[in-house]
Image (tube, rainbow, N blue to C red; front, side, top):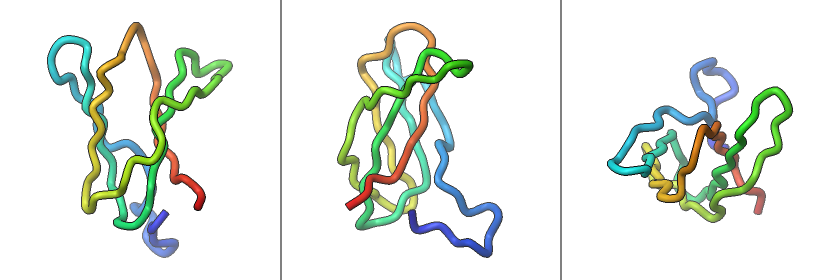
Length: 84
């Protein structure tokens, strides 16, 4: 993921989820060039069933953003590195 194992603050995690007008949300995270990411969502954290929203998001350092235009109801999000 391009993280540093000797730095406890180096992790792959969403940094922010901000409204962008209407029902759109802009999600951002620290990214590494040459890596691709997948954004997933769930409506329940007690019994999470993660569904892929989008794959193949290219890492654009230092921060990558994605605008989710298809939001409906309460959602939880997570980002993960795609395997080559």
